[in-house]
Length: 384
Image (cartoon, rainbow, N blue to C red; front, side, top):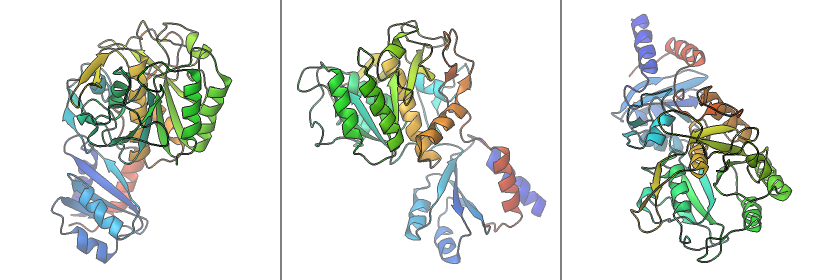
């Protein structure tokens, strides 16, 4: 019987993407009061108790379990075979992010949602009332409490990072950091500097998405990016659209060693986009052609465009998901996880850039460590 129970457990743990199963991991053993609350939840299919680590298996949303654990002041981590927000998608860029290769399957299955992580979008302004943000987008009056200028750019990039339909981190918070002042869409390097300085006052960890650039190299901007990384923020920037091997390193913030600088791939072939800057200052590739997102004109407006401006927010969204899903707090940790999950060597004509493509396809899969933990827990298990 014990062997049968163990086999059932291992089959459940390895059934990746079969059902929306979540494993809530807790340090230490569950006491009887907690169990008494949990056993009334019909979605809980198994509780594993162990002196060093306990696991609750739940099919469906883990929110009710989280509520019980919060009542008992219990810290926990959720590991999901499938995310809270799983859906079919017609957006190739999202579909590509959770597939090891072509053909795509018409679904987007990230390992998490970025819930409670904030993405600051430095751009032309965000349509915070757009339906795709579901009330998660806001402006901070200590910066500039202004509507977007006459450009879709900021709303577009923000929705790629965190829109509920167009985006990667579907429960992350978005803060609009509009760089231009007033109705004009013109911005300067000084606007970027001011925004970066302002961000140093915000509590970490958080993500910065910058699909903008100074037209020259700026030691000040690069130093501020370094300061933000030391502060606990991850700054993600676009590589630029000059199709150049040197331009990313000649401009800021793309040239900063403290940022994640993102280049673009095209649709269907994983080839570096002809417009994308590349080589030494590029850290990773992401989709950047024919990408749809939110527009500024109304709560349902859309905009479709191409550029490394679209590539960067894909990575910003992924970073938010990884912060939340893996309970990380340091930029080095989350960037290492991003590299671990990325696909190596798949970008065609990478041009000497680091050949990594943003990806989630390995996220949530069991490692040997998971299996060993499952084995040890199964030997001291209380089954419901």
